[in-house]
Length: 317
Image (tube, rainbow, N blue to C red):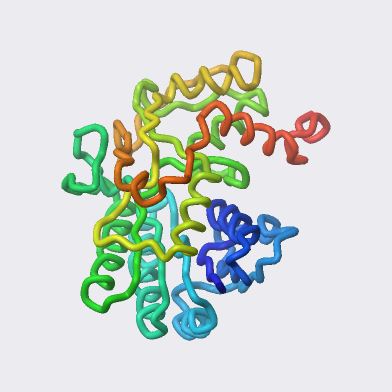
C-alpha cells in the first residue's frame, strides 16, 4: 500500500508518517507539505519522501494522488487566532484545499481520511460532545473546518468516494511547534516552564479540554488507511479525558517535579469554553487503539522538548 500524507512534515503529519512507516502493510509514504507550519527536520530518519508544495496546486496534487492507494489529509492552516487575523487564508487552505484533495481522490478512486476539528461544535453547551449535536462555529477556523468536513461527507454520498472525517480534539505530543503567537496550549506551557517563564492562561483557567496524545491519533489514522475505514457521519477522535487548564498545569508541574508560575490574561475571542468527546463511535470503529494516559503523554512530550538545543542551559543563559 502506498500512502500520501498532506501536511506530512507537520506535527500530526510527521507522527503519522512515522507510524505508517512501521506498518508492514505500507510499502511507501509520500509527505506533501508547503512547510508553512511543517519542518523538514520532522521527517529526519524516516523512509517517507517529502514533496514540497501546496494542496492548492491542483496539478501537483493530481499527480501525487494518482501514485497512491490512500490519502491522509492533514494539511491545514491551524489556529483560531490565526483565522481571526486572516479568515480568507484559513478558508482557502482548509475548505478549498480539502475540496481539491477530494476532487483528486474522486478522479483516482482513492480512499481518503481527513482531519476535521472539535471546534465545529462551537457554542453548543452539551457535554460530552457527540457527533449528532448541532454545530455552531465560533471562529473562521471552525467554520472552515466544518465546510471541509461537509465536503468529505458529501463526496462519500454523492460520488461514492471512500472517506472518513475525524474530528480532532486537542492533540499534543512531540514535534508540536512552539515559540510563536499561535502555539497550542500544551507546547506553550511546556516552553514557558522550561524557560522559567510564567505560563500564560487566557481567562480563569477553569475552561476544559479533551487532550489526545499524538501517538494515539497516528495509530487511528494508520488503522483507518490499512482497513479503509469509512463512515457516513463524522467521528470524534478523542477519548473523553476532560481536564481544566488549571488541572493540566498541576499535572505538568508534577511531571517537572517543581512548581510553575502562572499569569492570567484576558480570554481569547473564539475560544470554546468546555470540550469533551463522546468516543462511542471511535471505539466501535477502532476497538484495538488504546489512548495514552495524560500523565504518560505529558512525560513523553516534556522529555522530547528537554532534548531540544534551545532548552540547553547554555542556550538559556
